[in-house]
Length: 475
Image (cartoon, rainbow, N blue to C red; front, side, top):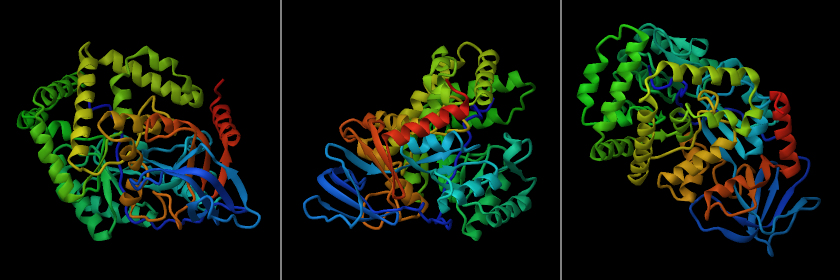
């Protein structure tokens, strides 16, 4: 069985041409006496005042020197900390009634959507950009580009040969996709046809690694980001050649496929060699290949057999149908796998944490993402904060973890309008009651969110969460 296909994949982004008009703002906003953490890597600056007009930051300076515009709404933020709004760089959005309120309430002001129905995604993207819909900015891939027997047939563009693969790139560009997402069942020839055509079309491509395409291959081909650390554990194994040979042996039944996948995972873990990881990291740095570890999704996979996930209080925000789907996946996984399956997957997750640590230490560019909407028991908004904590657990400093969803996201997307706090930037900010640089868990202590100049206090954020809960039928 393919490593829980629930953990769909990836995406990547180019210079985005989507509209970027801020929501209508009735008056100027002044946030006074706040401690600014601008995500550039600079130390926190106390006693600052931020002036916002027209949905953008106009001025940041010493509270005693900055003058409020006439008629501005002034917020006394003494004792509070402000960080840039965050981007979840790997999600799948299927509806907005529940997910958008949760994104905003937890300070997520932008998302990179890694696969879905393009007409819905374009409509939501445009409504957010125009200010008609309160929600995060969206960068979208549209459908996955996959080969025969697609993993997700309901939102895949299926190609049958390299010529169709090339045509898919042009079609998706004309359809309004911001990037191309490649998926599991492409052939090697189809994959490289997409890589070549995407380069010709000036459109980034990202995603999973089809069978027969290694992380080294993908990096050399120009894949902008690789999701879920795909292939890195395999290519870091001394048994890599044996694994490739085993993959060529046809499985005669679903149980045979599951047994083979488990054998491969054992070989990956038993043969893990940190020196091979360092070699791979050097290639990624050289080629500018980004990694999106989605550690919260990998952890959810490893612990899917635990009964505690059925008692998670956040389930009140998940609709009944989705809960049933999650439970069905869990039941199937528990019934169809041998007893040692979970221990092996837990060991694989721990090795992936080590790989993320090594990549980060060696300078591989990284992004924070959750895989919400594909991975079961991963929640919109709140789990991006868990991902930040997981990155710190993997060796990031709190500032570096914060940058993975702010500054790094802006660099990856080729945009200069967000990512840090500075004059001219979009007024997307999160006000916190405690310092996230001393404890990354303090990103959860949200007192208010400023969304492109619109100030949402704690009561407004609580109302959004109540709306999400009501929409889900939670109680």
